Image: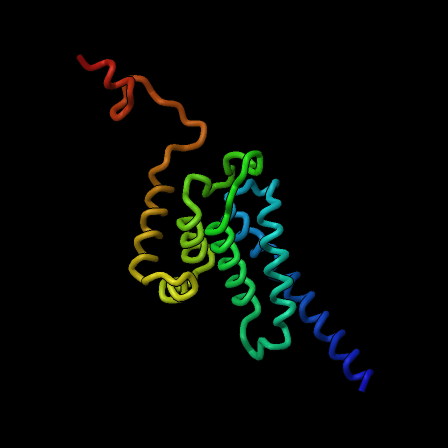
Length: 173
């Protein structure tokens, strides 16, 4: 009986290692997008990933045909949402301004955008996961997409006299 348990544990460890080898990169990228950290400096995203993988490992034997990637992604998203909701930043605790590609978005917008566009989660599933109405998911996703599409490029400078800039207003009398 002891040999059977040992063999099961070895098989479980191998299956989980194979899962991590295939899924960790994509999950880390999703976590980095969520936290709006720079890809080469993402300690919060790495902590989220570690917690998500640890939770998935604990639940591994109970998955019973369920997709482990879905479970890990679900935990990652809900953990991020919970941390954002309960974050209390005291003096000196912040890491400064986010630097990732989604830094211009709020946490909820990043979460919905990553789930819908990067991960391909259906509106209904995202709504159920986040406890929001389907229409709210659509609205947040549309607003976040519009914000990204119409945001000025990083490092772009204001052109004096261009329409819509303060230089144009100064030039008009």
